[in-house]
Image (cartoon, rainbow over all chains, first blue to last red; front, top):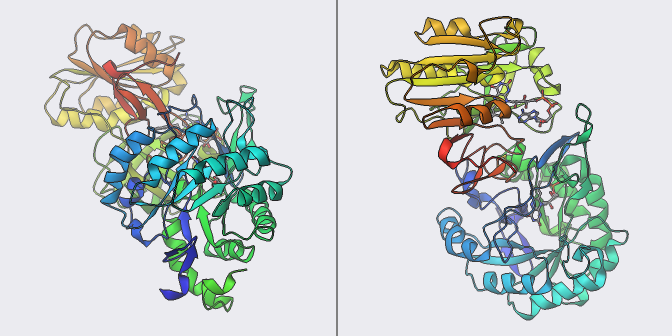
Length: 300
Length: 244
Ligand SMILES: Cc1cc2nc3c(=O)[nH]c(=O)nc-3n(C[C@H](O)[C@H](O)[C@H](O)COP(=O)(O)OP(=O)(O)OC[C@H]3O[C@@H](n4cnc5c(N)ncnc54)[C@H](O)[C@@H]3O)c2cc1C
Ligand SMILES: Cc1cc2nc3c(=O)[nH]c(=O)nc-3n(C[C@H](O)[C@H](O)[C@H](O)COP(=O)(O)O)c2cc1C
Ligand code: FES
């Protein structure tokens, strides 16, 4: 359907709906439930240079209208993603996929991105800078404009595909970080990653999550996400992908009105696996209701 | 795996806080015993995973203990109300490897999934021994159901107020060819140490999705990591690595 089409960094997508990294695995579980080719694309599980088991369990805590996760970037490592997961994905998904990359040192990001950049199936690289920098005292790359820019430059130097830098909301000035990434050559910005959160079990008086804290996401964070997307989209001249708490077609339109070119849906996939398919099907009617002819007309 | 609406046909208390709920709907995805369903409840973000206790052509039976908000909400529901249920989750127990005299060991709300398993093993012509463990006499449920289908059934209570005094591991039969177990982790560990044959264990973990997408429920095993929701909840004895 022409009216749902959007352009993200020079790649046309059938619609703006993108399941977010970490909530869609490598797609197969959802391909059992519906044809995932109806999606605009999806962002696969955060991939690192080395395989990672992640954090101890419990990794999940329920919240009002959301959840906390402390999965800890469990993934089989970039070599196995390319050798095993991508060939398997090819059988059920025929569009360019978004490759989500994490790292703990600048060289790790460059290494992983350079390998994924060569893969024909990869359309975009989404670089998650919400990880602790082992050479920077464990501070997240995403909390410091220089560190975020350094990751961006290192990745841009070894890749040809659009690089979208995914920002952490756990900062005081999101705009300065987005601008630093833009100046360092980022082709796009995506936000928000999860908000740092915590729950305590009244019975045990201990944190629910084994790692004490984790990333809070789901519908509860939507207003924070809209605000940050708005701030960043009005400050940079590169496309912004909005996410955080999106669960309906109305939310997608609101994110786009805040300035997003495309919209990711995270935690909601876990509790309602059909949510992205439903949003895509509902979009035309909701657009009619608000007099929106094409999604491209919502562009800033 | 499937997501569909089920109608509550029955929701009755078996003890002061354990309920049996019979749900009518599409049970086509529920195959093996030891699999589970994930139930969406209004006002709660995450679904609640509950084992399959029994099925027939049109109904699913679950047995659950009230421990918090979600199970509390379920206990207050009445016949005719609807629930959105994700069915066909997890690997379930493998009955083919049991030999001719399997032993089933259940503790507390680990007992329910063993019932469908026992039915299948009996239907395969096997002699089935069952040991059910509870804390006290007033917590005992399902004993008659296992007896009614022909299982050799023993109950153990921790305080000795009913049946054998002690834990399930204090009431093991002399002989058995294989075992299947589900219950709280301390019980599973004791079963692991006490049993003399191979067997299958069903585990619990906090879940984000219940169908393998989020990596919320991973555990280490001898053969690498596994997701309790998708590659489990049943693990065989030889692959288990107890958490350090
Ligand atoms: C595979 C599997 C099968 C299960 N089968 C049964 C069964 O047949 N009968 C039964 O009574 N219980 C069963 N449980 C436990 C049941 O899932 C929890 O008791 C239930 O989720 C508690 O929800 P609540 O809202 O009442 O408790 P709350 O404490 O309010 O729940 C808060 C959060 O913690 C999670 N949670 C709490 N306890 C557990 C637990 N033990 N395991 C996993 N998540 C938990 C909840 O799902 C929810 O997300 C099973 C668990 C798993 C993983
Ligand atoms: C279980 C889980 C795992 C996640 N893993 C990743 C990841 O590997 N990489 C990443 O960039 N973001 C990850 N995220 C963050 C999401 O992609 C998204 O940015 C965030 O959850 C906000 O969106 P939501 O509110 O729609 O979930 C994860 C989120 C969840 C809930
Ligand atoms: S609960 Fe999501 S992978 Fe197991």
